[in-house]
Length: 130
Image (cartoon, rainbow, N blue to C red; front, side, top):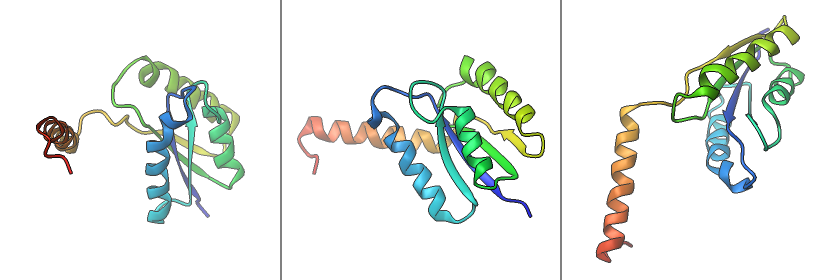
């Protein structure tokens, strides 16, 4: 029987609050019921590391792990570091399918969010913010 894990990957920070929005997204995804397991892991600084996050998923019974980088921009981490870590994890867990999804990148919905944030800032400047 397949058990699918969704592992969100973020950069990591010394500030715990830096990942709080991603944790809220993670909670939303858990609540959706679509995924058997939903976890988060970090490239550096914050626990758990990406290898540890994959291990957590496998220990919870995942036979498939889908990894989605919670990164807006394509860069060295997305292009080189993450594929290397995923490849290493695949060698450690040959019976588990591990697939790296795309980073967040461009999505037209982001344009709407940016416009909303700009309108909020403009309203605060005009003194009309509620």
